Image (cartoon, rainbow, N blue to C red; front, side, top):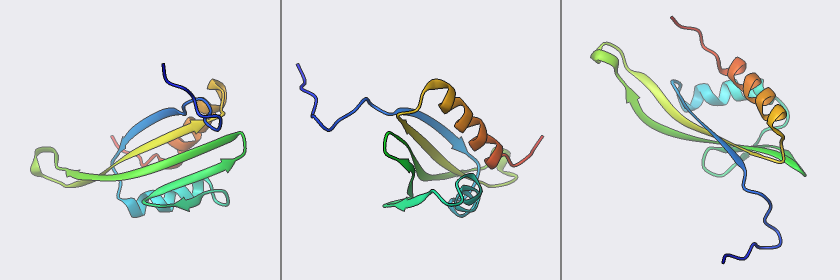
Length: 106
């Protein structure tokens, strides 16, 4: 039976999004999502908040997507790891994240 470390809390709640944007576009939009609270961590990872509640956002650049070979779209996998947030708070933050990163389209 695994033994929990005393400093380990509950596992974070993860949300993974495949987004059609470049890392630079992501960073520019992140400034609007969390203008004063995002701190850069190593390797394209950002941490918001602290204490009992935190949100870690990790960015992984992927191969571009080329539907039908007509255009080339950048792609990133974005992982949001929520620690200490209840379901309603997570839903509110995710809705704000989606509004901030919405880029229009058909």
